[in-house]
Image (cartoon, rainbow, N blue to C red; front, side, top):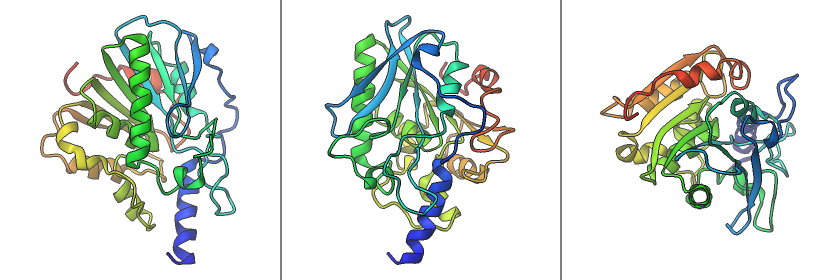
Length: 273
């Protein structure tokens, strides 16, 4: 890979990472949620995964929020040494969610690291089979701890790709919602004119498994990072779209979502509920 290609990739992923939090949005503690959550770090997986989970199960369905790609790149076009997200949008969406059982999963090496964490994990190896395996192991643990029967997934930005990949490899996911979701990483890379991530899995490779799962994908009308074309091309790849909805929201990649989230959650899913 030549130097110009590397710079193009890093510039793009700095944009996707959202290195600066929107002004006026403070950090959120898991104790701030209506149903207080506990912090659990799963460190027996290859990479550690930081989570919030219920103290006790209140229902048989767990709704899991999956973090975006975090601070993968720096302004100086170098990979970050710490992928922990500066933008805590996902936590604030959870504050607006009145569901009795909520959980949060960060991507590997966000918030906490081990000796296996390196910059490749949060740059070019995102959405790789190994990352998917680690994330699914954590989902299994969250489900087993609360003895949940069903799962609902909510993914933000790059967490949208992971939500779809996780759902495609399970039989207990009843719905997937994405917020400014990267539903089609290959297309998004081409759209921005950057090189592909060879290790990344493509959710559309699992369209047969995904087509029967209720999905709502919200895109921001002012989002230049993950524009509407990503959702459109994702939808066009399915022969049967009866369980998939694409909905526009007046928002950009970070701003405009929090205030509207309670109403967006009330939108009916396409099928299966």
